[in-house]
Length: 189
Image (spheres, helix red, strand yellow):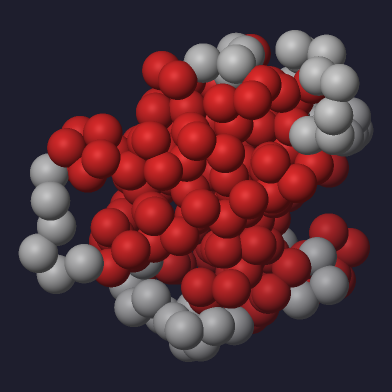
């Protein structure tokens, strides 16, 4: 399973949820650059000191937002409770493609600085998930390098598809991309 959020006092969880929800709403309205901590605190109806008890700055908030959004996508598809199969790998690639497309569509004005934060979170979570899947098979070799290569490949494929002006239908695209990722993981199947 992917690492879960740490156990927190319900009041702390509620406050973080307020902040993340306010941030989510603001991202739909304006660019990340245009969002200030003041905007977030006003929308969440909290004071700045409360914000800074939970987040160092808006970049950490963005990092947590991406982490939470992508984790939700993984959990919705129950991929965090699965094991490695070609079908599960296919669903993972679909999930990453759909997530990147959704982020680019839903956020008011996607920013260049936004991309590395999204990439870092998505690749880390895909890597962790793949590592869990592969370790369940008790392999005689390390899973770190194959999981890293596959995570980078999945993110690269998804980024290519979501940035394409003339996109192939997603299902067809994933069917074509799947063997390119799976070849790296076949030794564990």
